[in-house]
Amino acid sequence: MHVVMIDEDRSIHYEGRSYHSLSGVARTITGMCWSGPAFFGLTRKVAA
Image: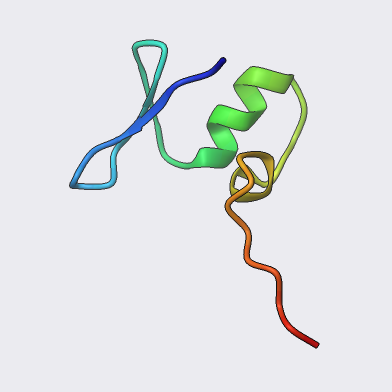
């Protein structure tokens, strides 16, 4: 399990480090380039 904290001022923290985006956290976890919102399941599905 991975725990990412996002403060009220939108600063992102993971394992004691600060990140500019969820994509940076996803890259740290996987070692690959990912869309952070997609990796964490935060994307919306658009109705057709």
